[in-house]
Length: 276
Image (cartoon, rainbow, N blue to C red; front, side):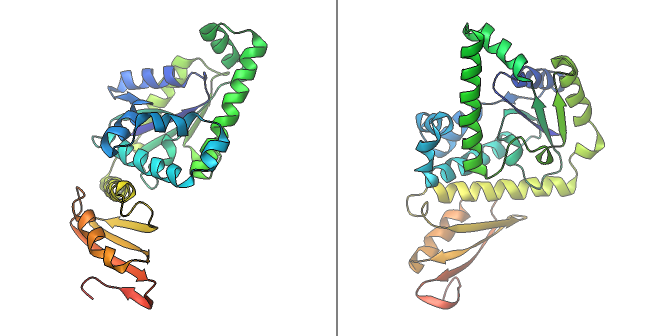
């Protein structure tokens, strides 16, 4: 069965569509729960997650490395939650967490401002002008935040498999269309897509382990995984850390072999190999 991500604007009906899809398919439906899971798995305080994800843009521009840490932890948590292949995620970032995995259905849900205004007016008791100001402010913050973390426009239709405009259909029809597409052959897991997902999971786990370790979180280490074999490469200013890095990665679930291929500032003419 497909893993489903549904991206939507605030008060744009995404939660309702996602919950209906999840109910029909008997999948868990998550959004903020993912943040809590990431906090539990990687020891990052939930309050700081909220600061990153909801604060004004000037805050996270000063904390680029923190954003990298959060993105790594979130991707690892998302992969863990999707291990059984049953997941419906609604928000804005889900489509960015599963690159190269073909059994992920990426949905973009568009809701016109008039629809969203009515939702906010009912839920928050605001007049139309205040509701519009609220939504425009929230849209601006979240669009800037997403751009800073992922480097892309979340509303770019090329990043999705299915785009739905709820001004042309009700929420039930939207959900039913998602369910129907999710059950098509193109979005069913096969051996290739499952291997891609497992490789992605191991890569995400390794990146998260490196990101939260005090000795390695500031290092620029690239990770590639394939069938349990992990390649690490980058520039090490402290070559003596290589052994510790390798031992750390070996402890990550799913890793069967570690191949370090680092360059060292003390040995600029070739890669530093394990045991040299």
